[in-house]
Length: 319
Image (cartoon, rainbow, N blue to C red; front, side):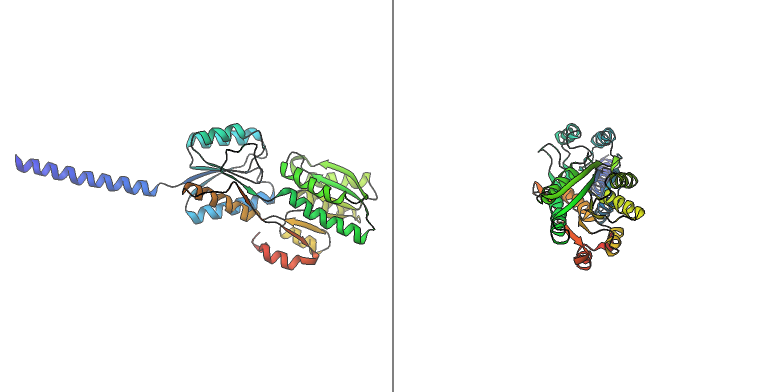
């Protein structure tokens, strides 16, 4: 009887050890899951952002869920609700609306899910951090370049048209920075400031064409992002017009446009760096590290004068 009892105890101990080791292995293998949501995957900027996020997630060995709400607030809110239900470890958010997503963001935070925001600041101080460029500075950089060009080459006088995606807070800030610079010259006239529906390039081209048609003597067009800028470049080229284009963002097409004299100046953000930094910051938060409330991604003015140096600094070929 004692022999049988000893055997049973031995078997019980062995099974307990096996189960304990199995549970430990499963726990160690539990993969971190990050829920991410961008504004739209139809813009080159956000394609680069996603590439940066994916690269960082792969290097860290974590699972990254990606949502593309296609600029729609209700779609982004639904995705965030799904992330909350699933119990993701952290959320990385490029918000569609700075106020509209706040209730669901604060719901996630209340349930213990840290939220990292990027590119667009939300109207809440409960998120872990905001990561992005200083959008007003972006506008002042390209606006300052334009102002200096008008003073030096055009006697301080110019007519300017503005193309922007008006619902984007980032573009509102950039446009204000641009206008604050160029309107310091008494001889500058803003002849148009028009919204580009959904911020799409083909819509930007149409808007630019309409502005040039209504203002035959226009001198400059300013675009608030890559699609608005390159839509304006396409419109000027198609019309054979003598209109100078300045804007925001950078990619290989824009570099070529600068080389060809079709784009005069732009301010380059670093979307790949922005994406990777957002993921890395989320992981650092999960490790218990202290995170600053704001992380600024540097920008760089690019024109023909510094094109080679700038593209090397930005590693433009990686775009």
